[in-house]
Amino acid sequence: MIIGFWGIFVLIPALKPLQGLLHKVLGWIPFFSTETAGPSMFVAGVILAIMILPTISSISRDVMRSVPPEMRSASMALGATKWEMIFSILLPSSVSGIIGAIMLGLGRALGETMAVTMVIGNSNRLNVSLFDAGNTIPAILANQFPEALDPAHIGALMYLAMILFALTLAVNMGALYLVKVLGFKE
Figure (cartoon, helix red, strand yellow):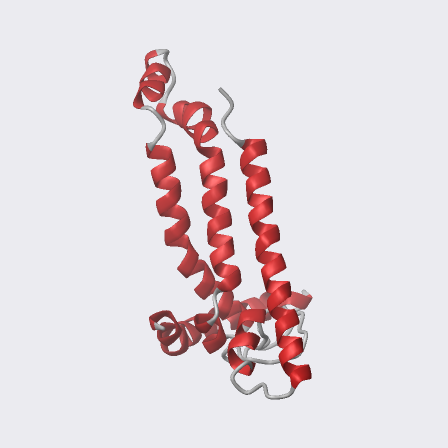
């Protein structure tokens, strides 16, 4: 809820000049074709990035710290510079954990509801421009489920929930596959 507060009262006004500049310079690209009106998909994306960055960075840091110090020391003893050790030992050893952290952050972003609901504009139109108001599946579920009385409306919301579940399951399966494929091989 704190992120929603900051999004409404701090981020929307702070990002308005950036949105105006992007529209002015890159307005010929459909993603930036609409003038900003305040709440938008762009602001929601920035808020999601701010929310998932600590998760990704802390897990990635822990994964890199778990690489045995003997491997790092051996690389340095053989004459590798610090950057050579990072790119030849540290990153290849921890790539599966870093990918896992990114997928965990993506899963968190997919399911985020309230912070996005407060700043995305709640428009049920399909828009190409990032500066238009939009909607997400969790936001639709949070906004419309308490008011749904018609069985057809409840059924439609249940189908949306099933689609969200399928997307989350696909992301998790993709993460498992990437971790197995790109994982550390001894």
